[in-house]
Length: 197
Image (cartoon, rainbow, N blue to C red; front, side, top):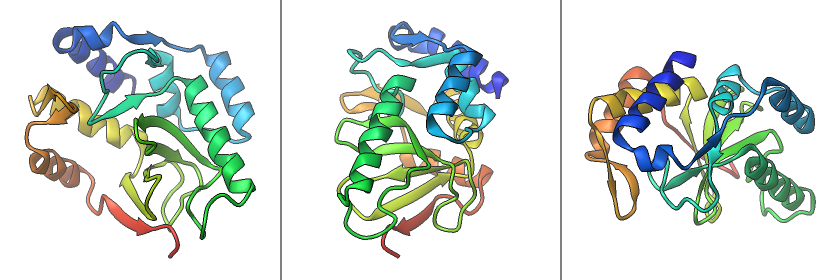
């Protein structure tokens, strides 16, 4: 995983220097241990490696990390998770499986959608998989089997020249090509699910 993070850092430094400068310094091992303690469960080493590298992007940075999502700091991730857990506990979600207290959001769309590390293995999946939460829909998508597989697909397609910045964020030049590459390396993904089923 560290090699993938190093490759990501080098690519961003060379090809998206403005965005690279908006990334916050990484957290320490002890800070990540404290974060796990606050969750009440562990997170994958790949998650830790990502945050040892950088603690998300500055809150005033409007540039997207990927697609039109922002790379959240640990503090922002914890705050989002707390808000969602409070909604869950208060009955704010209609139906089942709309939110899970063992989902850890680390990427966020301006509209409220979240990319999460799912430490429960929801919808018959495996703990550590990456799950996309839609705030206004019962749709849930298990995007990748792990954070490491997600980063591998992203970095490899970056290095292959498949992404570009546009007015909507940081997007694939050809979404079908990027999706096909990810599916080739991760057979069976993405997995489309419905929260209430």
